[in-house]
Image (tube, rainbow, N blue to C red; front, side, top):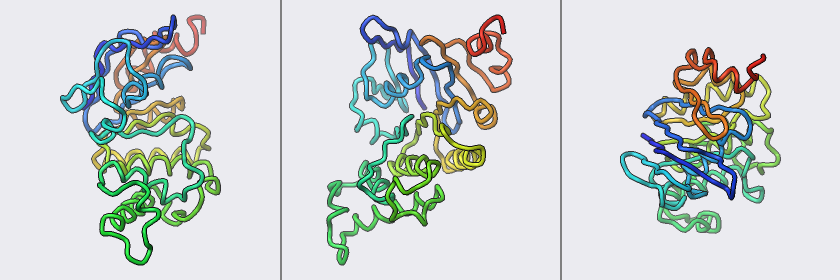
Length: 252
């Protein structure tokens, strides 16, 4: 589904990624792990198009997308969440999810919010049905009319996932979705991620919760200082000496 070929990214004199290659297979949960500052979120930003690469290329569904803009990648089928929650506080939960629906509709983004509630257009009604459907999917159907700041932290995370799913992506990039969650919320997230894959999506996941990663990932790529140091199944990665040294240090 996705290939990252010889990807490098420099910020001034700092090399965030160095000649990285990555291949994501359709229908898998592929985890990207590594110590803080390893270059994981930089890779997400390169895949989603928010920053340009210094060198290398990205191929999505057989098509080179290296120079395309973020909104074009979204329409091709790449959706994402963010490490820091980025919900619009002045819109309800439903309206936040409706924003994602506009990737595949013709209606103007604000027309759905300011149209007549008595006689909305067919497309505007469809956008609302879409948003409500994804809120139900992530377990927030009863929170549709609430403001994001009134939701519990774990619910805000799930709301971001609902918004990403409403874009109808083929590939979903989840940037530390379990950050700040308690064990029960993390377990509920595990179940949700598996349901997303069963729904026909592919997942690329950044996560520091190693128990979660080892539990749900089909394949894991480990990067450190911008370079890939290991890749394989959870069993292969957890016993890899280079991975153990990157996380614990050689002495440990």
